[in-house]
Structure formats: structure tokens, C-alpha cells
Length: 387
Image 1 (cartoon, rainbow, N blue to C red):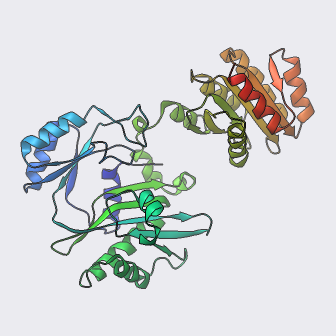
Image 2 (image 1 turned 180 degrees about the vertical axis):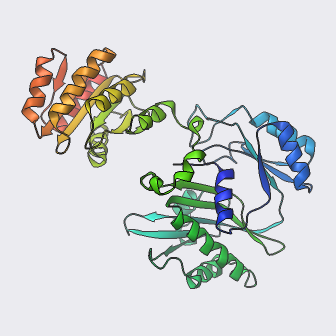
């Protein structure tokens, strides 16, 4: 789950992380009034969208007068911001954050996430703040500081001081910087974040340490521990198809290809997409119906896949374990009758009640193409997608 920057700032404040003075506005008039209340001569006007790369896309601008505030807010609110993470359709901007101008002396990148290979939380830091950390990692990996964190004891003050020192923070400011790093860890850990990214973390000329920009996402599997986060969800920022899938209880991610996939199990779904790519095709989605899907859920999955006009073929790949093949087969038949299947359908199923499932499909009279192996199914799907 993603949230907006202004929402993430409020969470940081709950953990005593110092943040710059700022407030969110929904109109140009409100933005100008906020700037008046903040005071000063320079403000940042920041589009609130669930995507990175806002600065390069024109979503973060400096205003040097109240007139600039009004003009920038007017141009952003109601627009769609296109960044490298949104795709060509962009993301809707309904709010802007008005933030005080600060005298920046140093800026750094700081990120907290889970290193799944090491199975530990990791603090990633770099003196190359304000730029894309991916580019730094690719071009200058020696400039990245990796600090693994014991999940039980947490980020120690000694570790935080060592990171601050390696970043080149002035010795007089290192203790404050370390305090902020520890508080960021406390936020990340307590809120079950999957990512907490500060880019940049700044030191001002007055020796104050602030997160100037914050990105926060949460582990969906832990949301039951944080019911207060539900109110922060902004459905406008989600792909409509992904939102519909989420409401149907499906794990779904929209992709750019034309071969729709319906699979049970995330690992099998990834293998299915990889196999499609191996044979030169392009998957249209990641769709995991889970291990206990009902006929209704399978039907909903078909409706979602067929709602995308770019889909040329559907590939169903099922390994029957907890999810039985006959249940999937019944769902396929019902879905095809309900949504009036108009594209080729390739089905490969193995496991529990496999023969019963195949018989249900055969007796349906539907033009279903069966395959015995994943490779056969993927190759057939790719061929049909090119017809």
C-alpha cells in the first residue's frame, strides 16, 4: 500500500522525526494562504501522486512569490503528472504540498527496506542525495553505504553514528543525524513498512537535519495490524483494473503485454510470465488467484482480464493442491458463458482433481486449447497472440 508524501510526513511526526513546515492544499487559493502562513521568500510546490520522479517531470517547483504559488498550484491541481513510474497515462494530481524553503548545506539519500536475499532489514545511504539511487548503484556502487539491521535489537545508535560519519556529515551534526536515522528505523519497523525512502535527507546551514522528501509504502500482509491506514488509501492513484481486482480479493498487477495470465500461486505466476517471455511473448498481467479461490473469484478474474482491449489470448496455468482443478474448471466455464469469451483460451492444469477438471472443460463445448506442460501452453499462447 502506498500513501502520499503529506500523509507520510504526519506519520514521521508521530515518531518524533523532525520535518520541514508544510501543509497540503486542494486549490490555488488554499495554497497561497498556506504560503502566507508559513512565511518566508521561497517555497516548494509539490504534486501529490503515488509515483517517483516528480521533480524531473515538473511535479516539484520552487516558488519565489505568492503569485508563483498560485500559478504553480493552478497548473498542477487537476492535471495528470507523467513520470517514468506512471506510464504515458500519468497520475491525477488533486493536491499539492506547500513546503517552507530551507538553506540546504548537505543532502543525502537514505532508504530502509527488506533485503530478501539476506532476510534482514537494511539501511541504504549515500552522499549522492537528490538523484536516482538506481543510477548511483549502477555507476558508482562504492558511494552506497549498506548497513544491515538486527530485526530484534533494531538500528543501534552506534550504527547510526557510523553511517552519519561515512556520509560526511559534519561532526557537530552527526549526533542529530544519528537520532533522525534511529527514529526513521523506528517508524519503518513499527509501521510494517516495505519501503521508507528519504531523498534527500538534508542538513541545513543552521545544522538542522530534515527529511525533505519522503516515500512510504506498507506491507499489505501487515495491514490488519494498522487499521488506521485504511483511511489513507487513495483509489484515484491506482490503475482502475488493479483496484477492481483488489476489491475482488485478487493479487493483480497490470503489465503492457497481450497475453493475460490466470495462475494460482505467486511463484507459479512468475514462472508462467517468464516462460511466455522465453517464447517471445509479452504477459498482460500478473494474476494470482490464490490457493483457496472460489468459482466466483475465477469468474471475476476472467471479467478483469477480458476488460483490457489489448488482450489477445488468455493462458490459465493451474497446479492443483489446495486449489482443486475442478473448481478452476467450473469457474472457467461460468466465466466464459458470462463474459462471452472472444479470444483464444489456453489451459494447462495439473494436480488434485485434474482429470475431473479436464472433463468439465471438455463437456463445456467451449473452444478451449489444452496443453500438458507449461512450455507447450506458453508456446501455444504466444502463437495465438500473433494471429
